[in-house]
Length: 307
Image (cartoon, rainbow, N blue to C red; front, side, top):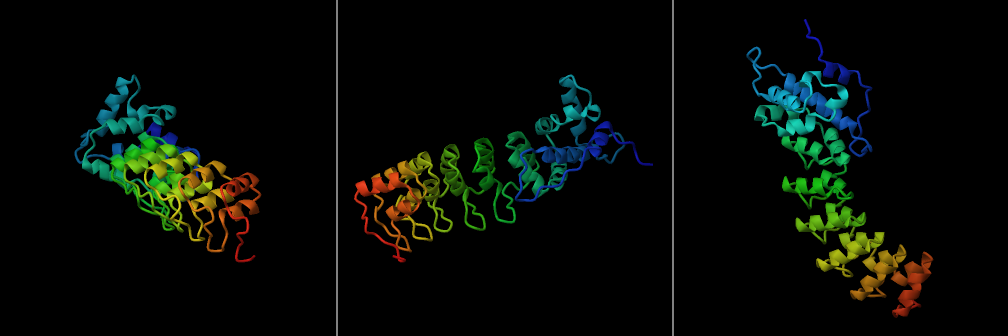
């Protein structure tokens, strides 16, 4: 005869079902990850030991003691709203055996892991780390958690991942690294952290280095920092033959253009199509940048292959 469900199990089973997110979709809310963690922990704690009445791993006993210390009811009687806040920090405080960790790890899926990272909650991420989950797991596009997080301000989670020895320079299938993404999104604190962990400042995808990405997006503070770290400001160009100056001029980033010229970037360097920074600025209607480049000596007669 099947045993009766505990109150917690009943409440969890009655929750509305949610569609699992794909590897490339990360919902703003992270209840999905917490829900799966709850189910996982229920299995860990409710797994009967070989001897009747024996709490072999001591996990449930320790959990109950922890809860009682907080003036709550034992784990099996915790109300839903309390349960949602309880498992992660409690389980992290337990000295779980390798057997329990393996059981916990088997209950974790890649989608749960990515939703946990998206939550921005370090404590949740640590739970997966405690279970020895693969924290360097890539999705179908080759994006690892650290690449995703590099475009956010979650430096605490990224530092935790780096301390767990995930690869700081592992690229996506397209060649994007964490530093590329951090520079492109203007996350200066993240850029500094990644450089501290020896991220490659010249790692390029489609010829675009982190400094190039920061230039095209207009993140002057990131451009300055990467330049101070020794990143090339003018030699490296993307697959179109654009230098960072081309990128900044085309997108209307005057202060970035000024900085790059101050670093000696060739003002009239042509792209593969023959465009100079002045051509691109003029074509996009950035008259302030065009005027600045002319004042700095840019040739007004420069033309493209199309004339």
